[in-house]
Length: 239
Image (cartoon, rainbow, N blue to C red; front, side):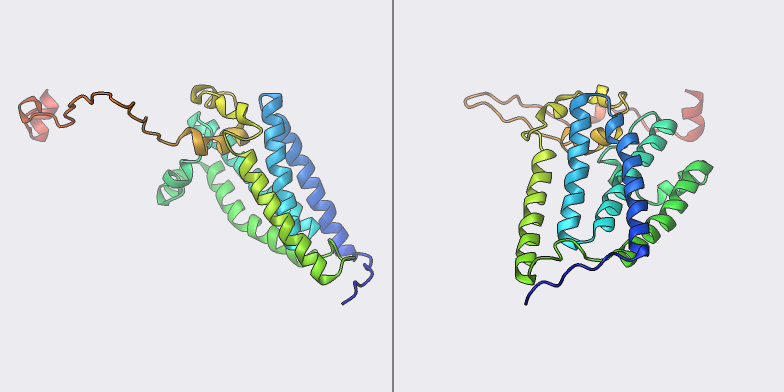
């Protein structure tokens, strides 16, 4: 089947594209370009641009490809700023497990700004993404034949996925970013970098035992004689 000539994009598509470009530009300034060091700025920018390319190859929608990563990275930036403001620690990977639960809502009820961010995000984020999808059209690679277009999409998605894994890897091209100590990461306010590198920095690695080394017989149980005797509430209060 021969390729059809690309028709001009309708006004609504051009409008949503302009909004997506503006949001992407704001994120670049407030996110990747606001990281602490030059290497971290390149690292965050590479993650964002590769994510956009991945979505573009998968959907062929330019505005949606800008909107989805912009919303995700922007949400991480805002969540990390709020967490640092109230808890003086940035958003890290373990927070996805320990904080995204019912306790988060209980904390949010005590802080109006957090509640507004959660409610606004729950409403605006899906709405903006649905709007971007409906107003945009799959117009990328429209000049190619269907078979060639699908092949290009498959190759592009696979290449971008592998590139993302390589970028966010301690042994990848940005290995120096992962050498930052956790104490520095907790204080330098490189919010995006600290979140993505924390997937590896917070991983527990048990050191290997050298060949021929003698293992110490360590008892991790405390003898009952060393445990304090139980006491009732009144006695414990007096002590």
